[in-house]
Length: 184
Image 1 (cartoon, rainbow, N blue to C red):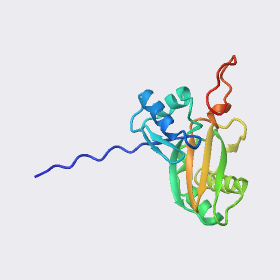
Image 2: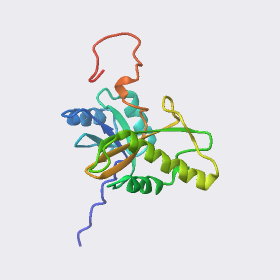
Image 3: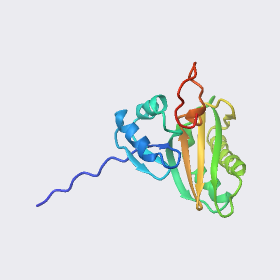
Image 4: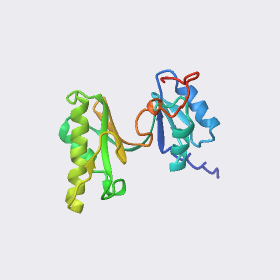
């Protein structure tokens, strides 16, 4: 009797990339020693431990953002968005004193304004936490403890935990000028 191979472990994180650089990013993440690397449209899936995400944030010169997709769902209108975001257990990501910010990109047939998408997602999170804890987290748009990124494409929303704190090329960690990586 033939035995089946165990399914490959699923990658936990996604590194976004500029169009056409996905294969370069894939090679870079493999060189960094990250497991479960596979390129996809718009970026590369990789890793399964928080340390993998931190390594990519610290050392990748090609990645734009490092995120952990938390939940993906059909999202045709604001109520779908609210219900889908609220279905996530936010108590495991946000403590009592932590601040949050929600950013959004993309559009659907009826959801066309990213600011509305971000605010509606934020409302679902704070409403859930207020119902469960009796208090809600504060919003800090500039330096949140937890940054969430909602991506909407063709009436499908994906809620991501953003490990990079925004686009990596904007972090300004270089003290002197030199040959710049992509998008800097």
